[in-house]
Length: 136
Image 1 (spheres, rainbow, N blue to C red):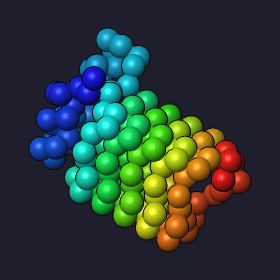
Image 2 (image 1 turned 45 degrees about the vertical axis):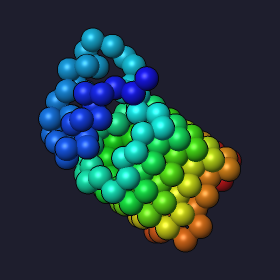
Image 3 (image 1 turned 180 degrees about the vertical axis):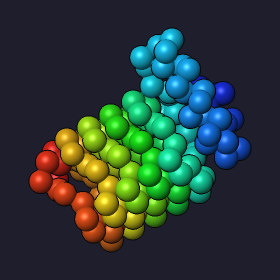
């Protein structure tokens, strides 16, 4: 079940308030926020903290995720077509079967990311070290 408070903050563009909320939540629980199958398309989420978030099947088409922290996020089957992930941290993220077509991944950190079946057609991978990406 998606976390409604997180959704409300993100959809209203309150990234700073969300980041403070998730920091407090992490003190109470180690689980990441559940945003599976949610529509977050086109949202401006610069520098958002989505570490350990469950975003499987989420629609993030055209989302602005520049500088976002997506370490160990679960993005299996997520749609990130045209998303801006410039300088995003995706270390250990699960991107299996995700659609990253035409996404901007310039300078993104993908070390140990799981990318089997992910689609990178037309994606900007400038400055990305693909050496440590799993199953690319």
